[in-house]
Length: 126
Image (cartoon, rainbow, N blue to C red; front, side, top):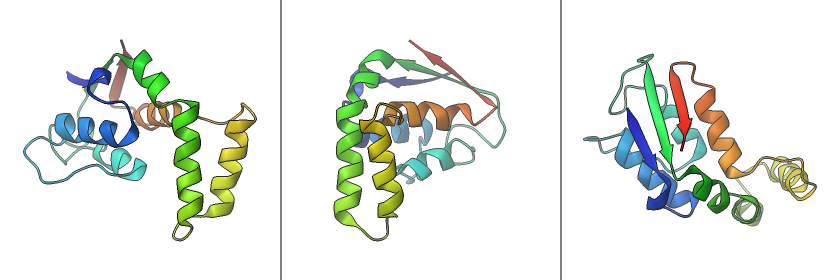
């Protein structure tokens, strides 16, 4: 069982630090992007191997849902748009518009979706 503790972070960078600490123990590999987070969930980067059955408990997930909610997600997209290349600004603008219209995913939603795409991982929100 692996525990992601929502009380240990309040933003996306803090989330990356937390999952790097708990999922990539004893490696020099650190999560720094959504793609990187997805990559470590395949296994082989730390505490479990490819296709191992894994249970992740996300403690204080309600706090994380708020911390990684609308405001943080809006800032995340706006920062990517400001940076421009290598980001697909048009796609990111579409995602930002969807978020503002109440139809888009927050960062929390995206992280949950990434985890749930890995059928060998059971996620428990506490």
